[in-house]
Image (cartoon, helix red, strand yellow):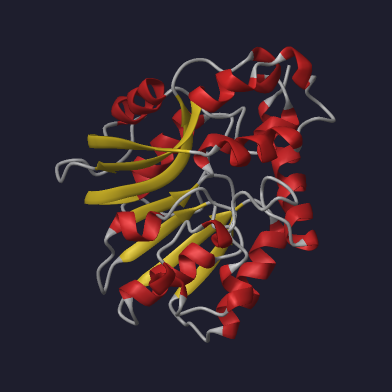
Length: 273
């Protein structure tokens, strides 16, 4: 049975290896990078190609967030820093962007990428999403890109997100969710956790977790993967999961990327206890 610690360790090692080898979150097939048109082409013209290519997400939280100049933005699981860089360009010199990630190699690369663009309004902090190194009521907007699904205790993640979000603030997330239960071998595979699949919960449960800590106006819009993308993710797990026992058709129908938005009421000032 996978524990919280073993999941954290496996995910951290997985992404450390990805940034060192230059492959995407799902392996050599690059199912999660910018060449798969996760972002509008115009959005990526503001960053060098080597920075744009270090994406490990499943969507475009920047466009979803509709960022404005002067806002403070928090990126949960900031990876190599692409979304932080794009956010920093949107909020401008009067705004501020904080990226939190648990993988030192990712933070190192993110800082190097920010330095290339000479951005002064971005910082990166080492930490876990379940215990954010951020003060209460800090962020106007929280973004995240295919990371919350990796967290073993999502209830803590949402509680922490709610705590650090300002009253009236917005959550804008791209994440992996499911419609129906995943096959048990995938749920128990640490490799599948690292590959953004096993940690995904059903959309209704995702909404329930957010509502339980106080988020309102929750919206989830499905963006289904093509079969090639799902195949690439499953093939990357073949050393751990006995794929012959799993119907890929079940996975094709069950797993999808989602655009998720929510708000924190202006009357709320902290997270749930």
